[in-house]
Each structure stands twice: as structure tokens, then as C-alpha cells.
Image (cartoon, rainbow, N blue to C red; front, top):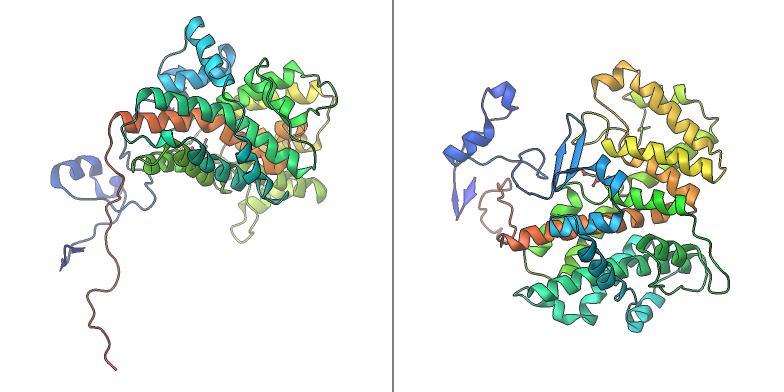
Amino acid sequence: LTYQGNTYDLPVVKGSEDELGVDISKLRATSGLITLDVGFKNTGSTTSDVTFLDGEKGILRYRGYSIEDLCEHSTFSEVAYLLINGELPTAQEFEQFKHDISRHTLVHENVRKIFDGFPADAHPMGVLSSLVTSLTAFHPESLDPNRDPKMVDLTIHRLIAKLPTLASWVYKKSIGHPLMYPENKLGYIENFMKMMFGLPVEDYEIDPILVDALDKLLILHADHEQNCSAATVRVVGSSQASLYVAIAAGINALWGPLHGGANQAVIEMLEDIHASGGDVDKFIDKAKDPNDPFRLMGFGHRVYKNFDPRAKIIKKHADAVLEKLGINDPLLEIAKGLEEKALNDEYFKARKLYPNVDFYSGIIYKAMGFPTEMFTVLFALGRLPGWIAQWKESRNLNQPISRPRQIYTGEVARPYPTK
Ligand code: MLT
């Protein structure tokens, strides 16, 4: 260990708590030892009162309310309020919240000029994160380092209001359609769907089943404790950078195929299986073969050693949406086939590999007409209130600037080579 210029030879103890017969967190707290935990894996080194997750039992709760109850009784906007403010809104608070958001759905016309410069085939997540960062320039008062609560609320409302507008613009541009402007008399989801799928020249019928399904999907994605993107938002926020750039950083973290990009990877996998004849058994065998590069996407999760509770709810909606739309998607049949086989297979059972949230969500998005590149954007729309709640908690607690403790593993001091 090199610390303040001195090099120490320290014993390195490797092994799990069970193998070593110690409670590492207690040992750490009492002895001052530090744990080398690349990527904040399993140390439970942070606390939060936003989201509870029990991966063994498959439980997920926002602010103490189960995800099942929230999906049954609340809308996404109510859940957003809950995550951000800690309580479900009263009728009056909710009216005010909706009003505060709907008045900010437009974006500055110069943001549109920045947007115009992006190529039509740019990945939507890159465009979205850039435009969210650009909001800092149009609302510089959000940089207030003292975090005036009114300014914080205004920034939160602006973000929630503007993200659907920006997201729909990216899609419209990718297909060469005129951009749609928000209609504030519509609800949050209806407005987004109209901006996505409507045209200025014709009426757009908003199907309530699809609105409900998207609303539920966004609720299911609204928070998932301190994972890659939420931790990123907290880390960036800890430097007192503006909320806009902290959220833009979260969007970038989410973009990757191991995080939010996973549902896109699932659909691509299902399409490949379908194109090669749809033999589910063959692909289950491939997934079990350590020498085969094929991976069963959407199965297993870092924290769930049980069914991802979100996947169970999504599966029900997948059936309802496809039935309503009269779509007989062979990909859903393949997905169900894979799930059934895997859940009855010793290999998957022993490894506790269950379908996760990404396994079915893409099938619904696809049925609704969203192209695969937009899937991660939908994840970002859903996750926004969670990121905001995580940021707010960290800032309200005045958590210090993030700075991981590092163990130096490089060369010791070396003499500079002389010629
Ligand atoms: C999520 O919802 O963010 C994903 O399941 C990833 C995670 O929580 O690790």
C-alpha cells in the first residue's frame, strides 16, 4: 500500500465472509480495515430510504410501498411524486404537481437548434443526454450551489416535463417526421404517446390500454436502489454540479448494454432465435455450454436470486397488450418457451437464474410501435424520478464529495531513466 509517499507491506486476505469466518462489515468498522471492492459490488457501503430491495425474496418497494400495490393503485406521476417527496400526494398536492410539470413541457427554441445539428441516425441516448446537459445553459440559475429549495423544485419540474418532449423529438427525427409539440391538456403518458406517434395533420387516437401499459412499465422502472446509473447521479451531484448534468450522467450510465440497454439485447436475441427456426431447446443448451458464446439475455440479475418482481407484472401486461392489439408475436412465444424451459432446468435453478425486468419489456414496447433504439430512452423516462430522489437524498444529507478510497497496485517509486 502506498499512502502519502510511504510504502507499506500489508497482508492481503482474500475470501468470502463464510470462507474466512468473519463479518467483514464489523471487522471493517472496528479495525479500520478497508475492503477492496472493485465497482462497489456487495459491501452494503451506502444507505438510502428511497427504495427497498430484497433480492432473495424478490421484493421491491418504493418508500415502503410494494411495487405490486403501486402498479395496481397509482399512476406513474403519483409514483414520481412519491419517490421525490417521500409521500404519496394528496389530491390537492397532485393537482399542483401536474400543473407545475405541464407548464414546463416546451423547450427553448435554441435547444431545438442544437438538436437540429444531430444526425438523424444518432443513438437516441447520446442525443438525450446532450440535450439534458444543454438545459444547464438555458437555465443557469439551476447551478445555485446553495440549492435554494424553490430552484430545486423548478429544476425537477422542468426535467420531468421536458424529457418526454426531447425523447419524442429524437424518434421523430429518426423517421423524418415533423416534430410534435406538447399538448398540456393531455396526461403525462398520453402527451408523450401523441408526440411520439401523432402527426400535426391528423387526429391521434390514444388507446387507454396502451397508455395504462406504458404507465405501469414506467412505474416498474422508476427506481432500483443504488445501481450503476443511480450511483452515477449521486456521484456527479456530490460535486454540486447542476441536477441537469447529474441526470445527463445517469442517462449515459444507463445507456450501456449491461444496464438499460439490456432490453434491446433481449429483443435482438429473440429475433435471432426466431430467424434460426425458433428451437428453444437448442438455445437453452447453448446457454449452458461454457464454450458457446451465446448468452441468455434478460436472465439473472446481480441482486435477484429469485424472480424479478417487475418481470412478473410485465408478463401480465405483455399478454394484455398483444391481445388488445391483435398481435400474435412469435417472439413472445419464444420468450415464454425459454422461461418455461429454464425454470425447470437444474442448471438455471442451481444458479438462481430467473427472468428479469428486461426479459418481457421489449416485447411490449415493440408491440406499441417503439423501435428498439428507443427502449433505453423509455427506461430513462421511467427512471428519472428515481434518479431525482437519489440525488435529492444525497444532497439533503449534505453527503461529501464522492471519492473512492483506492489501493495503489502500480510500480513503487522508480528512478527516472537517464540517457
Ligand atoms: C435496474 O432496474 O436499474 C436494473 O435492474 C439494474 C440494477 O438495478 O442493477
